[in-house]
Image (cartoon, rainbow over all chains, first blue to last red; front, side):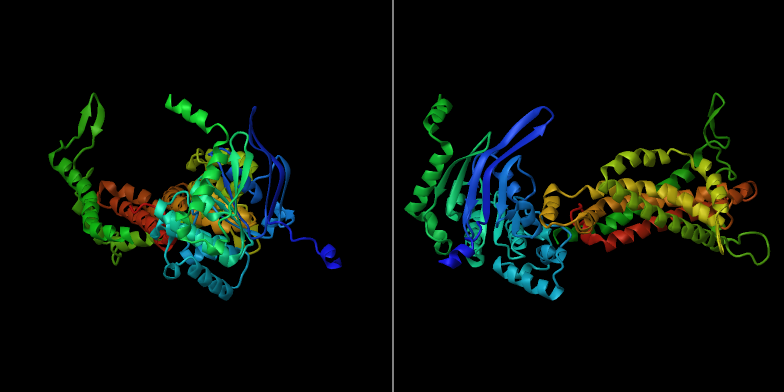
Length: 276
Length: 297
């Protein structure tokens, strides 16, 4: 009993409370985010979904401390977002793989380790592990321009995992891939998440992608970016999710739920206006 | 690599084009010399085309033959080409020193301007302005300032003034090119370095410097050409003996009796320029890893 009060409950991976973000340029003001509150538990996979311009990428950049909120607070593992960034508590992957063209695959993956002073032998070992994890064992010495888009994105994911973060921030990482590569990458991401047990904040505008990957889907509305709904996806733990899940009825039910949340209450009216 | 096969297959064609580039002016020269009027073409007293006498326009083979004849009529004089090569080597050494100083200064200025926005606004106009000052005007100044320098056994020599003037020309393309190169990285890459919590220096070393290579190499090539031109001109205006600049002036006086002679140091200057640019091309080969994004040219 006493012990429970001495040890506070493990801090959530991400805790966003009442966050606004207003972009000012001259006399124009754009409210990108308004009163956003969301929390991501340790090991949880949460997707941010919404039409373009709804501030989902902005929210991710705030968590990554690439940008600062106009008001409200963001904590990552109980620390400020800035401190979490300085402590390298998260790994990040963007829509563009963003590999350095002059570094080999190996060189790209070990970049974060190298900049933080890991010993060469340790780096080598870790990169070998990561290459195996993303299935690129034979490509360590290749250069990014020799790889397909999907392979480049796998390198970027390996790089984001280099320092074994407990939180992964991903901004439409599969957005530029073709549908088949995309599904394969989703399967792999599910597996990697199960292996590493890290929490993920995943920005996407694909409903099936969000449903397939997530424990919860945060549905956002545009201008000002607000959270419209948070949909719990009850398709079982990540470990059990395989490619076959895409065929199941539960998958389609969840997709319908997210779609309804995304379109709000007036989809019929919108449709009517379009077909007029 | 996919692009690897193409340049190899293109090599003979490129060699032919290069050879053609040399032959066409030679042919044009000889053609005009054969067909043009001896007194040249003048319209209303304004000379438009040069005279075609052997004195004004020696045959290209006269120029070449002159390279292999002794430099002067003095007994035991070495062939002309050794004298020219020696002078070219002397000039190349000074130009190299000037290029190196210019590259270091240019890189330093670009780093300062990249790091501090205020430095950018304050310095860029001066850097551009510096290149509008005529070389002839600064040469005597540099020489005078240099001659007043004395630390212990160190004595300022004339060749150092020449190197400084070469550097004065060479630093400009490097500063401008490097500044562009340092700001070349994509936003996503800069964000990535930020998420790695890297400071300015680490970001510079890991990202900005390697990303600037495709911008830096043309700048260094331009700087090499500028350094050579600067050295040749400064040799003349400072009066430094031993280099190709002085040789061009001296031999020009001999044109009356020995029309092939003035061309020898001019060929020397061409070789000099080629050597300088070739050296930078060699650097480019060593740095090819950083040029993967470039189109194969």
